[in-house]
Image (cartoon, rainbow, N blue to C red; front, side):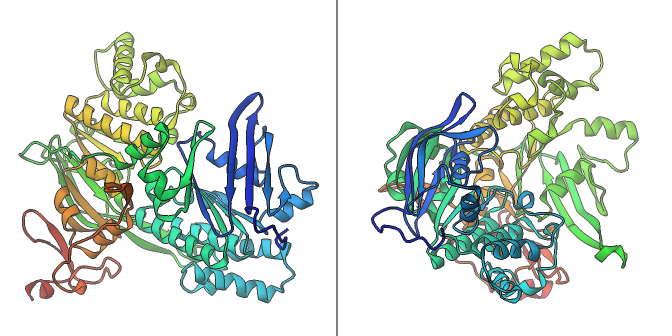
Length: 591
């Protein structure tokens, strides 16, 4: 099918009146779409809108008991809705149409080396020799900008970062030079820098080979950067389609306008704390992890996950801790909560060193700290009802009857925008946004002084993100808690946090009030983060993608500390008005 010639007047892919059903319920209804050679089409919408179901239906990969109940799908002039044989569908997958999933670790076999997984499809669909297949795999890994590709083929998926695994998936799919690539939320779990690198690579490789792309995403700013056309889905219906610039500037449907409004997040109004002594004070915190060497034959290697990090959070203040995946952000949050052992440094809360105070006092102090994790589905007990989950926050409160605890839980559910009757449900019966509200309710019911929010909205749709951020602002005004907000999304922390700490490879490289960071970031890594984060802004011709324009900074880049060279001398220097930046050495600073 990969060599099929098509009528140039007919699009590469044509979907007519598509309906997808699970039993008697239809999840996609009456969808009409087309895609031309070399074009990038974005399918956008919230979770549950039917985006992924459309992508899977093209390859016949709908989960059981899903089925195409009406309509037709034509690819390269052939009817593929009901292939004539399993062999025809097998030839279609991989050879003519490639698919990249959201989480590459779940689609890569953890027991097979990367090389074997890349070779498998080539052996199945081509007559190339083993040497030719190996050469093509190495060349594709080089095209996706992986260093020393010949050494990577013998490694396993767990030995790579998320961004590297996604590049390997792109290389594996593009080795067969498919005519159509379906990318299903390919960068949702990645930070801004890695996300841009992966999508730039995917676009470059696809454009070079003339491959058409269906980019499935809920991130409109990302879509605006890469897609030629946009198709907007709402609850199974295609509500709008058109050229990207036209849809952004003049959206025709009310749902599209709501999506675009949520993507802009609104005018920042950071939460400032009360002046005075720090509520949380972290001094020179270091965290090490022991990593086994090859087959455990040569002992263990120490990985310095966090090195000499110092930060403060004032009462009632929202402080952001930002950086890419693997920078050590979550490790710091876990170390503050004593969920990860420290290799050095101290953590003080309300003026007391948590490591030196008595056991009883330590427990009392730690109960004033609560955590909201990134994934509420994994942090909420699936066997407990919502009311009991929220009541868990009161288990150390003396003198409360069971009825009083239940009432407090229901009151807190209402405070976070949920109905009282949800107390009787289980977590699986709630949406992602509702589960995150439950996690916030569990954290707040004990009226803590500090909340550590670890990527609490990164897995949520843009509309739900906006709701949760507004909820946190309202609850902070009501309860007065402080927050250490951990995120890789600079535009989200801009909405909440009065100050930002920027972390790179376990070390702080910049700290300043949030407006100063966004107006004039000093460290090259912070500037890289800012440049990689796409955003939508209202312009003269309507909403459009805004490229970050950063002012020039004085001094050579070599003057700034490079976290990839941990042996270099390191100092955080105050450059004025509370703006601290990491310089390489005392000698550079003096010069």
